[in-house]
Image (cartoon, rainbow, N blue to C red; front, side, top):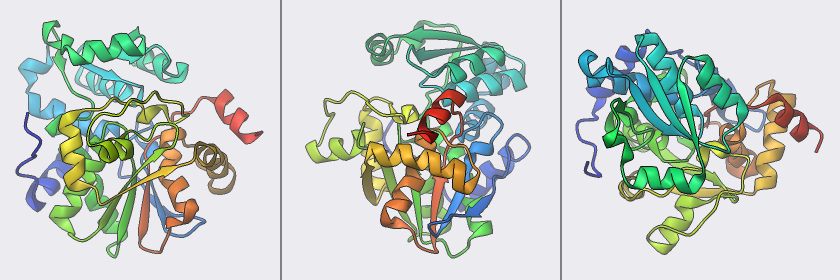
Length: 310
């Protein structure tokens, strides 16, 4: 796989959006108390944007291959998306997850009929680095580096433009980078000039640090935004460097407060990663033309209670 993703023009973005329409929800764009708007991808069937990319990838793989079953690796939301798509297509599914993944996500994967394989972070990163999936019988869908997954995420852009034609800036939480690459490619095709801002927590500012040292930094995640705990990937490093206009790292305390304020003030449940973009907005980056992607809402009730009482 090369770093470039070719053929993502306006026609392709609309084609993918049409392909996905029967399988996903067109999520609402609502005003944010701080100004700007929130795109509620937390309302997708599995509670995150990930279903867009996994449905797109499964469609492109082909029925004969998909019948072998689906396999992915995930901190949680990609696992849920893969399991959901496999159930919809009536094929087996297995997902490799961090053994620190929230129980809500692990149980959700199993409830969808998939096999959740839990590994320590070191073991899982070794599994990824050695491309161990190539020895497995299922079809592997990379959770963020797959071109089909990334193109699937571009389907968010026509929805934003339909609701807010004058959008000027979009703020996106970043883990592996698939979501923000898809959004950046979508805007480049449909409305060039929209500024794309990537945000992470100071508890794991992987990409901001990577660009500062021009390579993989030595970091261990220490954040409630577990959905952004993906490892460094050299292919994504190149893509992100060419597609993202600005990087922001939000203090972990701000992320925690923002999860609570979304619940109390906006009446929306967001997990840590899902709250990151809004945390960047309340940290002084909102304007009438700004959209923050609320990427996921799979938050355990006990964690929400904890954050509400801090």
